[in-house]
Length: 135
Image (tube, rainbow, N blue to C red; front, side):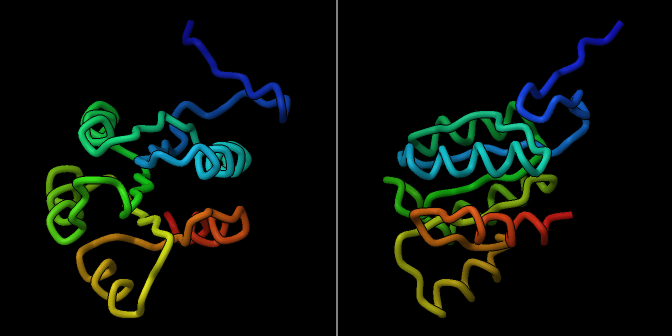
């Protein structure tokens, strides 16, 4: 008999094939909003990493899901990191988080292969809009 995961908040047995999410950010405030909104939308939160090495280890371990990547983390060079993640883990969707954005930055992020962008601090409504675009 397989073990099933139960969500006490909703009173439902969770689908083991539902999408997974990882947060690469030092912000606990962003983590709180992400965890709650993702849970409500049926995602499994697989962890938060405060540095890029730990985040990539989580990506390697899970191989499938959504990576919320804070562009402001030390050592993050989006023009190198996003394409390499997309090449190595094509089943990961990347959403960039940043406290500041320009039209040029947004255009470049999308060109590199990220699916979307969220301004920090993350707002639940904006996160829901991004999640609605993920298939």
